[in-house]
Length: 186
Image 1 (tube, rainbow, N blue to C red):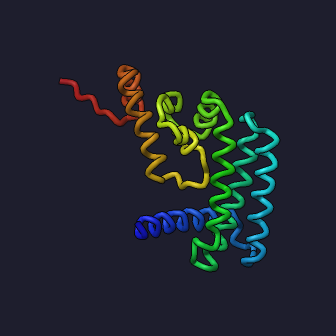
Image 2 (cartoon, rainbow, N blue to C red; image 1 turned 90 degrees about the horizontal axis):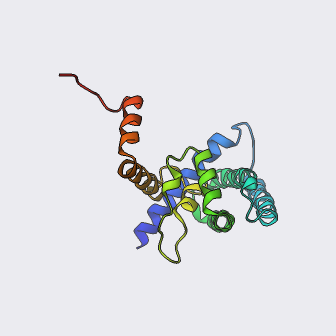
Image 3 (cartoon, rainbow, N blue to C red; image 1 turned 30 degrees about the vertical axis):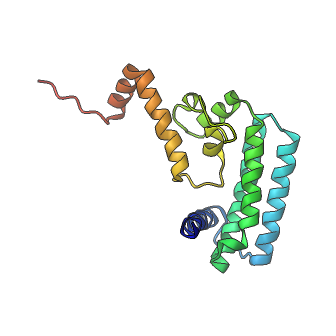
């Protein structure tokens, strides 16, 4: 059990550090205290927007941008201290903020947001989910998880699988145009 928690922390640590490198200018000299202040400010702003626009998907880009800023500064803190536990509470706050906002949206709104983010076949997700668990697109859209997170990839794979099952002719045509299928004439 401890090993799983440790590997989960390392995954989050790596994601936060990558965000810090790409989002925050390398020239920015933010120490740990300044970064912690920026995390608090970014999460507070994201929370204000999310509360004001609950149920309205048009504010998601602003909410996500502020959460991404907070995550990037969390990455700066973890780079300084090389310890995920320093930012774990803020990370959980960011995750819950995104989760509560996304759950307040309708399935159709989440489908639109996922399509905008480049998720393939979002209309084929969330058809069934277990009671007490978040809808699949909430997991996909939550920016606190790295794009290569297994849960996100499972949701994408399932959507792709459903697409092939339900629209085989379209899937074949798509594969032909993508160049992933080679047709050999006899």
